[in-house]
Image (cartoon, rainbow, N blue to C red; front, side, top):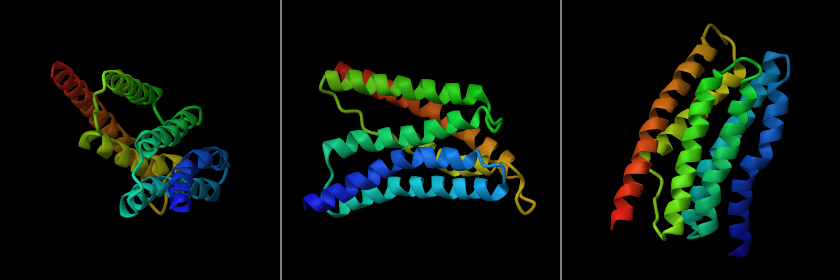
Length: 182
């Protein structure tokens, strides 16, 4: 059982450990390097689903996993978003909005935890993360591919994630306010 738990933890941690490799490969100057980097990002993103599935399937859901899984997601997504700014693939204001929302929600969750309140992940926040994990590979590739405007698609989809991000931030504030009144 402990071996399996370590596998689940290892899958979660792999998202964090893949970040430097994704960034190094996305800085390559050829389309092949960018595609490889995008594939590494997709692989890292898939571990988000795999660790949760393994934990639920094997009855190994833990407090550590509940806390660190979204942290690993944030490390993966925000690191790559920030790395995309200097190479001109993303609007810095978009990243600022996303980081501000994540900081706000993290603060609310910490405040709730200090008051012994649980604010679980909301659907809009889960969708936001999923959409970001779809948009980011397109931004990493950053150029037309086989006639498909990959960069434009990635940027458009990422702006959609900003809208969902704002909606989910409001949801968290509402549920915190509601829970703290009880």
